[in-house]
Image 1 (cartoon, one colour):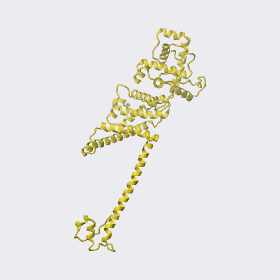
Image 2 (image 1 turned 180 degrees about the vertical axis):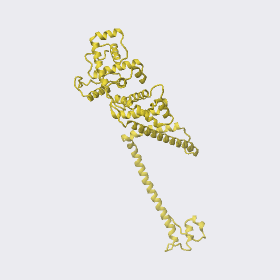
Image 3 (image 1 turned 120 degrees about the horizontal axis):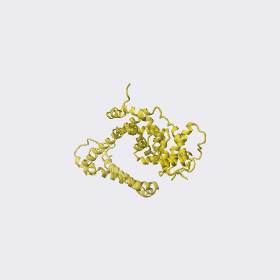
Image 4 (image 1 turned 60 degrees about the horizontal axis):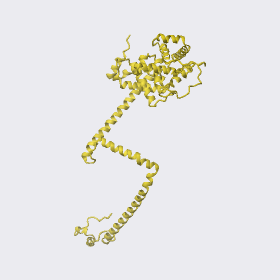
Length: 192
Length: 212
């Protein structure tokens, strides 16, 4: 049985002119790109557009791909940067209820009560909505940690951020999320 | 009544499997009710996040991506060709027109500045004046004068035309017989009336004179 070809081998083939081989990379990583994009924007159509744009950028910059890292990590970084860029340029509207300094600009939605019985899809919707309301940068880190299961170190590499920044922003993101979901009991909110 | 930041960060690091807290923090986590409460809250959040399953992309996504790349590549190629074509035209014009003496030699930057100046003047002065009706007030008397002038020019032109026709009639009528043919010995009268025709003296009529 044939071993699947390594990503860097495929990249080399594409760079040598066999453009159709890029389809193999798209087949392998479109799920990853879609999940990250969807997690960051919460909309199917926007996530689909993002997948196309991200792979187009990857295709155009394929000669900049460094074979020392994985293709998945590279394309994930392009995805996060693309989404953050779109938020910054206001091309994608976010539901964030925090300003750029991380201060809340809207009151928590008191209609959600964690004691209520919810169906699985309702629970997922509640979680996704709450994630959408985080500041853009926090949301990206939280998604990479929880939806993509990356370690702090991998997130720091992926987003080119210091490890301390990742730790701090992840900590704040979770506190905001817990507060949003009414999961915090008592006065634990930020401890600041 | 709040859990210190340091404890909160350690709680999260523990739940992430990113290391064990130092002895002092571990003791506080074990003994302090508030810290334990925070730990429980975070644990619930982690469980909720873990239970979340992101949706799969539509099955058509890889095909759509490849079609998108192809389309964008084609558009870029066409845009590059348009750019080449325009640059070629620009280079040809900027070389030939000065050679033909049609325009002075100007650098591309000078043309850009000239165009920018026109755009600025239009956008800054002319267009707002047109929008506000100011331009109409300024242009209206000029337009009225132009109409009057055009009327007078037409009048003058009609008068001149009329004079020429009458002069033509005066010259022609006496030398034509009833059939509209020139009479044989009247050509001298024509020469008398218009000295320019004297050069034709002695020559027979080879074609009729036509005044238009």
